[in-house]
Length: 161
Image (tube, rainbow, N blue to C red; front, side, top):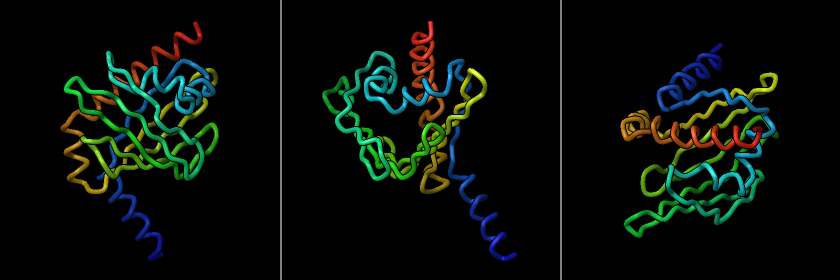
């Protein structure tokens, strides 16, 4: 019983450190999975509109590293990188993530649920603290990732047309 109480407390604590976006894509799960796991697809949607992204490293396996860079207008570089800790083909990806210089030390949980010919997509980011989570939300988490997922959706729809 005590163990169950501790598990509930832990889940409650995590719920205060997590931001989630849910979306349904009108394409089969296989296509959404490929968009997340194939570098040729990643470069088409990962960056904000009008920006280019370069896949520097992409070892899609548990323990594998990924690193994407994006040149900024001021000449600096925005770096996205992490290490995969769990991969369940074609259902789930869990990875550490740093988005330098804006966000560091988070964990991404990406779920792909088959829904007939559609895909229910859940993207969750777990932050190290509740305060950091709130700060990231205020910095535009939903607009930033929402924009990327809109680009992902357009890319996916163009593939099936």
